Image 1: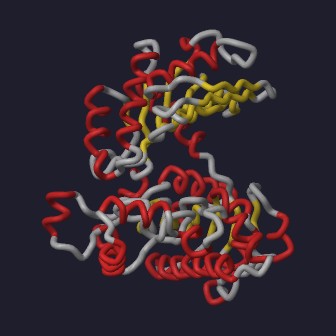
Image 2: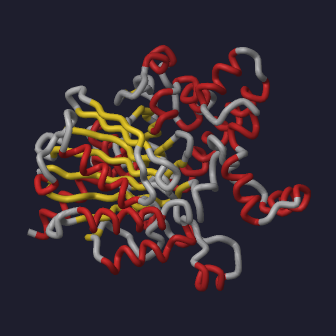
Length: 401
């Protein structure tokens, strides 16, 4: 069974075609700069590739190009779209409306679009892509949507509610939703398997670290708390996001700069974080290089990042009344040994001790980093959100038959 996994952004359409027989990726690519000019790239598992400048006024044209790249030319992997058994879509925000995957219908698309105020960059783009996909695919091809927020719906009210008047929750749905849920769900299950333990018996802290970063407390396979909040801006310092700050600092800075609410949001989402503190870059690799050359602001950004992760580990160990394992995933978590080393330093109280020499060698590979006998295990666990979406899609389609 071939399943196409689609991840739509405001100006992009990423995809992977996965053969579920052995869960191998046959092809992957991206149609980006939608609504601007357009660029398409496509690669196959056997090394063939295609790249071109295109005209993508909307997501419909981008999806038509996706179909063309999969089915025609020297880099084609299928003859036509009828070979695809189903399509799985990543959706960022499902709010309290969607707590599990579901089949795509016109009503579901409308509900996803209705949630666009809670994820303005993502949800409307998801709806556009879903409509484009529906228009292009054979009518009998099932489509499934998988929500990033669904994994966090197991949080208790004490974890997701804010100290605002309760009416703001009732009328405007203001609460913590959390994000990266598909990744946290995949890696926590993969870790339990690697440890040879039933996930129901484990207390795991999952650190998804990348340009966007979040941490989740996973108790018995269920999320009980997470660092991102109402939006992905909350929690840790990130590439260009400030993370959690005093709300009064927001109004103070807005007044000083004369910002509108939208301008302040852009300031906190696009000009802060690693970039804002360091003045160098939003990329952790650039920060590391600059810090090694003596740049104090770059060094400070790295120290803040690691310190905040340590605090979340401590608070989530308290929330779960225990800690069996900490895992690192995402672009930084999997490939930045210096970040992992900094986070795990001086954490012996929690039973965290890693093999420093081994840590330096590990990049993007499932590996246990903790020393023998350490009370809390530390692992690098590569994430694969697309595979989990494909698995969820397969399960839905199989159950329907």
